[in-house]
Length: 292
Image (tube, rainbow, N blue to C red; front, top):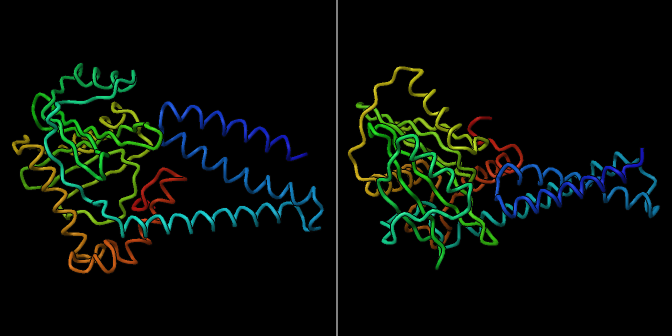
């Protein structure tokens, strides 16, 4: 069978996915499109080489070769990207502050639908926060709690190239003995260490809030865990989380101490490898490295 039909069809599908993702900014569509681009590169270049008569090697061997070349080039690119992040002034654990402008939700219908769903489920707004990660670039967050104040939902809006926005959520509950149960669908690579009292479940494939909420309730309700109401101010608690994460990752060798970061950057060589591995798994499988 002539591979041209497969290559052309894959290119059309990739273009459709790209256009659709311009509007939805969906990590799931991005994963599908990455696989398609990889296959198009391998099969397409192999077909061009065969048609030009450059080599007499079998087509399947050329396909495997170009697929490996693509993986190597992307590996180098990602490694340089992680190194640049490590050396940049962008904070890995940004500090949040109250958003003086109040709650700011994007006006896209799918975001508004999520906000209306939260209200319909009895969740109420507790605080609106933001953190500056670069000049004029902010992470914005709206914090909700249920009527019992035992479940806290952090809705995070991540700015994307081209002006798109991706919405992620982090659900957390705490117990009287200090355990923190966290369920989120963040797709950004973390690869670091959590404090020992954190029970974290990352589910990047669960893009809808109802599905993520069901997963969180399965974790806490299924084990008959006694939960404690949240009394800490969300801003104070969130910045304490960021500080705890930075401290534990510095102590465990994921981050360099502050006095060494000007010379070496923020991340150690082991950390850069772990981030690269998690970025690869998230980009192509939508799974965190800790589940492999």
